[in-house]
Image (cartoon, rainbow over all chains, first blue to last red; front, side):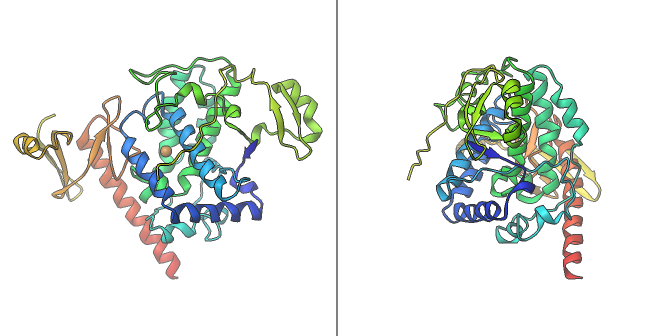
Length: 272
Length: 93
Ligand SMILES: [Cu+2]
């Protein structure tokens, strides 16, 4: 099971692998395809709707699978913009990480335009008790602000053309996963017609929110929930987690805490 | 919506009704009924499921009023241009 982690905790090897995979996906046209697809569906229920979180979870998963064709160990790292909120942060914006793409891919970034949300605002959002009060605030302002703060391509309809998109949305997806684990059994609520639990997601008519509610069933976890060898017993007791392999990756899960039906991972079939 | 014109910070914002006959002829009926222009340049926009508007170029700020959104876009564009200039100046020094 892949562990998605904060970009700060990537090893040099993992970071370089991720960067090479991005360059590869740009050269094969996949990045532009994802950007185009996002722009095409922008107004069609993938934003400002109950499908916002599930649609982007599916999209990220498919993008991650494309990265994994380059190297099977890659997972998408996340950018927590409540912590890394400085445009001068070398870790993130330097040319040896995401800075290089600005001129390379003509992204016209204007780092620092507008506001970012605070950790306190994220905490308040995490305490919402229903899906219908949780997602609208997570989407706007928490998700919207970093798009504008980065600026350029990241602020337009085709924002997946900037690699920062994937790190930002990985963080949003993590916040959803965290909220789900803290609110077991809370039901999905539809925000309107064709936006329910079993309604198809735009672009992938055979996929629905029900397929993606359980991120463990999609084959990944986040570092905040990853077990440490020395703490296995406590972790098992708290989460229903059964065991770890020698390298510390989960061997199997009982998903009682997610309290929702298991999802299945999509298989990528690309139209050539 | 009604056709409307406003000046804002040395920019001219206009909501102009489209020629519906022309729309039918060219089969572009999906285009919105009103055209938004800033300084006579068309600004593309769309509507989210709840009816609020977003601009193609400035897609993550949503309001119910297109003229207000145009003003926010003007402010945003100015501040982003400033930021880019500062970054460039910093790089040159
Ligand atoms: Cu986004």
